[in-house]
Each structure stands twice: as structure tokens, then as C-alpha cells.
Length: 136
Image (cartoon, rainbow, N blue to C red; front, side, top):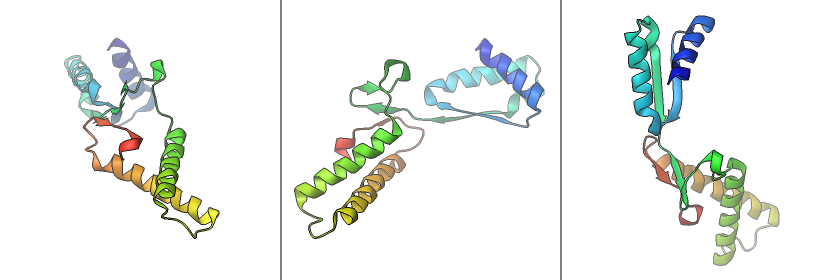
């Protein structure tokens, strides 16, 4: 908290900004409410110009994603996995027989990316989501 108090003051002093938006997970909602309240109590007029845009956390079947524990999903790996899943399912179902390998790879990519986008967009951004690429 003390670090956030200091950096907020420093940012407003050095950069003369009108508003500061923190984009941080919803686990930090209380922290940013308190930060704003303390700055208001300290008499900083700009304290009401701090905004916290929170979002839900993405969890894996094995638990929370944590960068310190190495349980974070890399976006490139996720995209590759979605394309691989689309490929496997398409091959199992025999849906792309007669397509050239290049056409099929393009379709796998479209299907994989579409499934990923749909899954992410169907969840309310403020709610936590369980991400399991095998159950999309």
C-alpha cells in the first residue's frame, strides 16, 4: 500500500496526468478502494481521478495461474494448443477430407482462434473463469 501511495503521488507530480487507471485483477478491488480513500484523506484533490478497472482471473483445471509458480499460460502456447485441438478433432471427424494441407491448416487456425475468442468473450470480464482448452 505504501508503495502504491508513493507511486501515485509521483505519477501525478511528474507527469501532470488527469486520470490514472489501474487495470488489475478483481482480487485487488479492496486494495484500490483503500488507496483512493487514503489519498483523499491526505488531501490530494486528484485522488478521485484514480480508477480501478478490474477483471476476473483465469484459472486452470489445476488451480490459479501464478507467474511466480510457473502456472501461467503463454498466449502463443495457448493459440498453438487451440489449433492443435481443432486439427485433432477435425481429423477424428474426417471433416476436411479433400482439402489441401494448406487449406486445412488455415481452417484449423480459424476454428481454433474462433473457439478461443468465443470462450473468452462469453464470460463476464469481472468474473473468474476456468480455462480448460479440452472442454471448449
